[in-house]
Image (cartoon, rainbow, N blue to C red; front, side, top):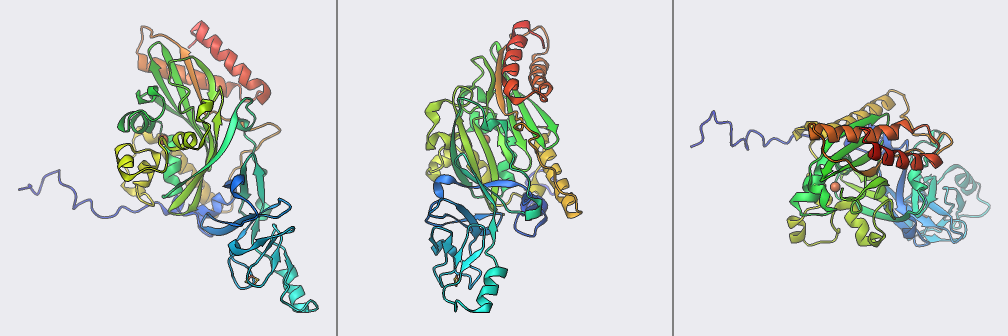
Length: 447
Ligand code: FES
Ligand SMILES: [Fe+2]
């Protein structure tokens, strides 16, 4: 018999659903979270998917069609024709736009009604309709194999942010896209969760990235305005490996490498294996759209294939049997297993979840501020590319006669400080400066 005072067998007491966090989970049009996200540029498709055969996509809960005219101009428009709502996925792409299959209306990529061929050409009403009504369309920017869109109020459109990650020489960028069957926050959380890399990617499922991941490091979080960094510093024999994951609000993410760094070889300011955004499709689905980065300062070039990108993104290839997934869960299993929308009220957040708590709080504050009329902050270029911090540094720093956990944490902090101190430096000088200084720090043991 279970004693009624027992502090175990709490199933019944805890069976009541805990509830989820609507404020940051809901992103459809008209929701506070949806309004907030609609103030930023988001990737919506890969250029390779966009052609003169229209493609139906869903972003932020909106059904959209993306297409290319025969003159190669990309249009991102509402799915339903403003005449009688036929789907433009059946439309025909022409020189100047897309023609609805039902009654032949022709729309330009920016939403102008160019022709209403079934109507009397002299009809004043048709002329008025052509002038007055539009097909809903969004501005896009095609960049390096990815199509970005701005889906907010036109008068609030921010400039297109340019990150330093776009300009690192000798890196091959391969666009990829991976769908998740869960809310966007679940996928975003993982970037501010450096501990899961040790357990999920290094122990529970065997070694999914490099061997060194299994070691649980010293975690430190840094908050710098809209930029959140989670540093995991590990000792690997005589080396100290500083790996930094990065989130720039609302949804830009970078990390260190997945396979290139394992702490055994010296590495100075190696850069992220991906440059990636987590974009809501609707409240229960999201998509990671990214470049996988390959080269000496990112992941090895032999991973530059579809499978490589999937493994970098989620630790495993995506298309697997249930048995494989259950035996070796990757990120997709971890985050989708929480349910379509995770019940945040049932979480018990720990000090290692500090980064998650902070960024969620920031998003919540920005959403509230926007409701009260204050526009969310934008990361601006100010004449130079935006500096990012996702990186790996491995220095040879043998143990000293001090508490090693504290010591490796201080090395992690010193590596980050060097990067922060060079923040004002032009990007063209910054990389070589950091690399040189890291090597000096290692030589002089200046920690
Ligand atoms: S429904 Fe599209 S032209 Fe009539
Ligand atoms: Fe992960």
